[in-house]
Length: 185
Ligand code: HEM
Image (cartoon, rainbow, N blue to C red; front, side, top):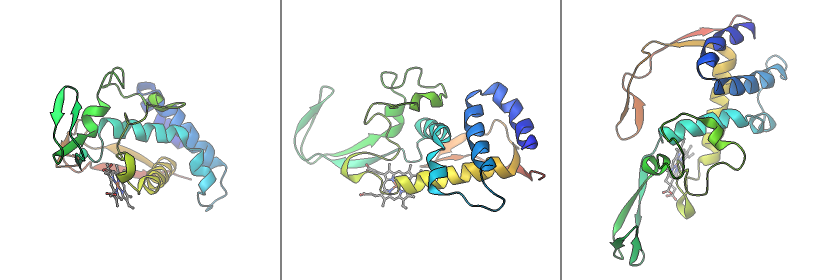
């Protein structure tokens, strides 16, 4: 735990929001006996970590968007859309709309505090009847990954300014090489 605190000390002074996420994960780790696995209740306590993950998905949605077909003629934002047209909705532009997310380029997980963004403004998993059925599974997987990474490892990015490329999903241009070191117990 001491190692963990040192590791995050520097990062937290730069990005204070990390403190809440790390504290949350450390509290959960402390409540477990050696070798005891996470359970559903633990993941329900990872609220701030999920806010961080959501803010990452807002700025870099894993899926840029998806297609729909117009069932009827309609007008959207002054554009006439005829029945039968194929439409592409885009998560990236929705997530960067300043009317929905003030100061949209700023990384700020507190946007997801409380009730969070208005319906259909945060759409990494889509929306409506075809919304991603894997959403809850993905949430679980992301939180368990975050917990184990924070709890077990000290890590360092080897390419601090590595770019993200979209091909068609956002991925680190060089595969995100990191140096992982197991915490001493
Ligand atoms: C971070 C992880 C994930 C993201 C961001 C994501 C995102 C999405 C999005 C945007 C759609 C299109 C929704 C729409 O058209 O409204 C979708 C569809 C879908 N996703 Fe995911 N997904 C994720 C993980 C998963 C997982 C883990 C599974 C399965 C275990 C899954 C299964 C599916 C399936 C089957 C569809 C098609 C649903 C349909 O067309 O009715 N996804 N996903």
